[in-house]
Structures are given as C-alpha cells and as structure tokens.
Image (cartoon, rainbow, N blue to C red; front, side):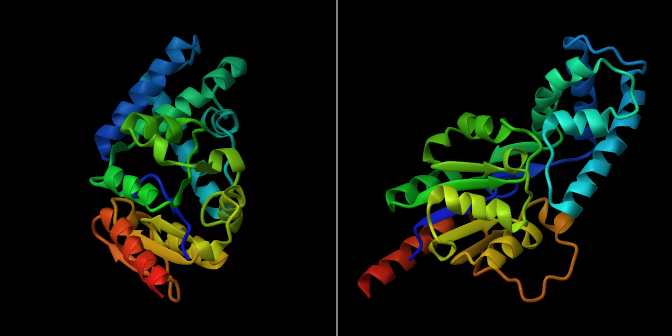
Length: 254
C-alpha cells in the first residue's frame, strides 16, 4: 500500500520557463549582488557574464555526469569565479544568495495549477508528503514552498545541495526513504523527466511512478530510456490525488 508521495520541484510542483530575457536578468542580478556585498570585479556586467556563465554551465555538465552536488560556496568559488580576481571571503558569504537568485531568476517559476488542491487532498488521505529536488541552493526550495502557501503539506524535503547527491543517484532517494522511515514499495514518486524522476525511483524500487510534462522534459530526456516507464502519465497534477485515492480505496475494499 502506498503510504507516501514524493515530488520533484521544478517542472513538477512548479511550472517553469526560461528564455533569453531570463539570462539577461540573471546577469543583472548577479552584478547587483556583488555590488551589495562590496565584491569588486574588474569587468562590466556583460563581460563578467561572458566569463562566469560558461563556468557555471561547465559545473552543471559535470554535476549531471557525476550526479554529485557541491555546496554553493564551492560552486561559485571553484567554478563561477575560478579565474576572476575577487575577495574570496566576501564571495563565500554571498554564495547562497547568488545560488538562490539564480534558481528563481534563471527560470520563471510558479506553483503548478491545482498543485495546492492536490497536496491538500493527499494529506486528507493520510499520506506522507515530501519533496526530492536537484538544486544548487540550500534554502530556495523551502522559501518557494512557503511563498506558494503549501509548505505546511510537506513532512520532509531532501535537496541535492544538502545531501550531495543528484537525482537519479539512488542515494538521494534512499536518504528520503530513510527520513520517511518507509520502504520504497510504500512510496510513489512524481516528476517531469524519465532521466531523473522515473529511472531513479524505478531503480530504488518505488511502488508507483508518475510523470507529468514540463518545459524541461524535452531538454533533459535526450537519451534512450527503454525499460523505464512511469506507471501513470498525467496532464493535470491533480490526477495524482484522484488516482491514488482510487487505488487506496480499492486496496481497502479488498
């Protein structure tokens, strides 16, 4: 019997989108934060972006290959500003603020339609609810759920920035399961990519896997994933509640 539902964040609980204007705003906000922290750089905003952005993309590519997540301080000191002469102590102090800004500016994010009603419904069913997210910020997911008015529905939140493993690494799911004190077959997972949110839970042995399409789905699911399919593909995230309600009612009837 399913006793818990765990969710991916960006693309699943959240709708998100990014285009060239997001990059421009991120560049501007990065320069602003540096100024507010008294971090002098020998470049203008555009030139700084041209140096920092490729290094952050390099980190992203490495982290997706190794499935390991560094702390914000390491990302920005060892990658973003690796060859840029800045005050390292001030940069370390500003790193989480930069990481948080990056997550909410590089993408436009909004709580997915009906996600709040779906979460409330799952709690009414008595289910344990958690988030398992890849993120380079330590606090952004917590604050975003609070801003959306749904933080109260979550029993636990497991982040790659805290545990050091990125989905689909089995350890990030195993940590979430350990915190829930549940077996994998007692848990459902909901995500928007096969590459992270279906393969990972499948390999660990989750009881049910749901997939919903997002802006990220075609960008992240570029490989061959034969043998890995979700139990359900949903268009409306509220369907996660209705499907589980029906299944739980059927199990109780039997």
